[in-house]
Image (tube, rainbow, N blue to C red; front, side, top):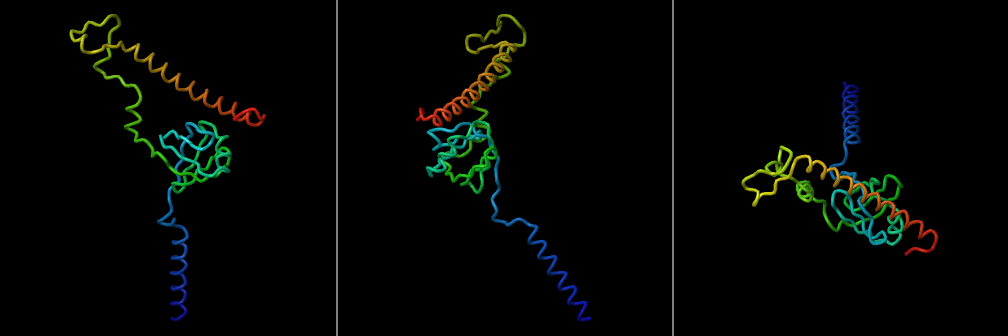
Length: 175
C-alpha cells in the first residue's frame, strides 16, 4: 500500500512538473512581427508599417539600424527590443509613437462613397451636381491603381536611397 501511494505521489509530481514546463509563463509578452516602413535620422528612428515609431538611443545600435531597409521584417519583443529577422540584428528601442489604429489608417487613404460614383459612362447628369462631385466608376478604379503604383514606387525609391547611403558611407563620401 505504501508503495502504491509513493507511485501515485511521484506520478502526480511528474504531471505537475510537466504542466509547469509546458505552459508559458503568465508574464511572457507576445512578440509582434511588423514590416519596416522607413529608417530615419541616420538610424536613430525606425518607422514601422503599423504606424509606430521607435527611437534608438544607443549609438552602436544606430549603426546597425542605419543599414535596415524598408519591407524587412522586425519582431517587437517586450515593447522595448527590435529584432530584424532579415539581418539578425537585435537592438534596444523606445516607442515614441504608438501604432495607428486600423480605422485611422483606412481614413488616411482616399475613399470614394458609392453615391459619388456614377455608374454610367459619359457626363454627369445629376441635379445636385453643384453640391456633389460625381466621379465615373472607371475613373475611380484607374485612380486607385495609380495611387497603389505610386506607393509602390515611393517604397522602391526609399529602398534605393538607403542602399545608396550605405554605399556612400562605405566609400567614405557619405554623411
